[in-house]
Length: 254
Length: 254
Image 1 (tube, rainbow over the protein chains, first blue to last red):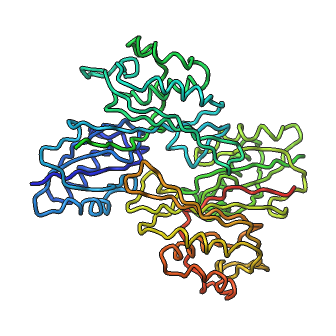
Image 2: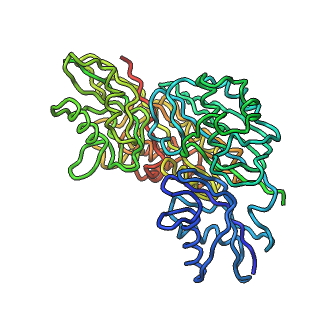
Image 3: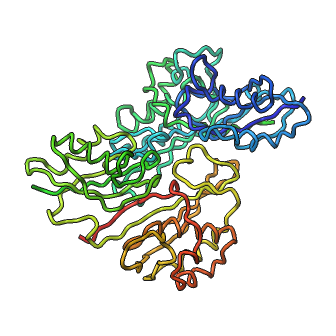
């Protein structure tokens, strides 16, 4: 046997998230069915990130095991022939049989996109959160910087979480503002790009919701340290909607 | 009465183009129905560009007439409440009663987007043309430059066209190449941005298909002048698919 690592991109709009659940369409479910049909036996992938309903990915990771006679590299093109257009394997490669996408040290990068514009943009409706009042990007940048480092992110995770430790390290949290010269409304795409060694349940969406309120002036840009200190979900801002979120890449140390 | 000018953005994926046709959903048809329902009488808009099936717009223009008691500015928000999410009015303003979106001098800008990448990107599938082999962008830029100026574009329009004159002026034709540092496949978004005083039937898609073949090396970068000279549709490249095309803006001289 050998283990195949897939890098998986998907538009999450029409899926109830990554993880298999009875009665609904999920990205993991579609992968399992497609690979099982291709190999004529039941296959279950192991995924790196269980993204929520409506969340997108460029670079989620999944592994499965195959007989030695298959070359790992063929699976990207082979599976893409059978996958729906909103799930596309970006690459397939062999990894050691004991390699596990959730048990290896890694850096994950997410992007949360806010379309800041007086009217909605139908071409970006599925991949951005829309916000119509002008946001103070400089304050958002300053607040984002205070998240960098090793912190207890208990205030920035869903109360539903069940993990033992809520300590994580954020390597970078940048707020990038792009203007489109073709846009007569002067709209801006504000991207929160965040890289860390792991993220708690809803953590990026709560960070995005908090930075959004910094941008509106509802939350002071200096208040991130006291929010971290509080270790209480009530201390931070709301959870931003899923459509703005994309898991960009996962870089493993081995 | 007063005349209202709408700037209309839409994702053309699920529409059979702009123009009303029996039995199918069109952008113009949805606008007519929505405005008629809102005003409780039958209204038919006059559009600037009859975009093809699957083509998108940021800034198509349509006008209709209303009773004096309505302020023109209310229509953007009012209609957006009832329009589907893939059609969004960007602005509404009053214009003179004799103003016609197809009979006034204007500059139209289109963008044709090519996703040049070894695998498809599910997040951009509806708004880009996918091409997997690496394109020679420098040659595409050089060829694009030869289209600028006043020319007879007979070689770059569908044989189905019925217009009297095929002479048009192209003010600019730029090829812009953007790389995404987050993309492990080194993918590039190649945008052909073209501004002119008017475009013939399928003209931008034929230009895009021709520049694409310049990028692959199938057509020499020096061959645009002889293609223009030929005044024959057979002389130019294929018509690129609709999903890559977006009507960006129409700027009127008055």
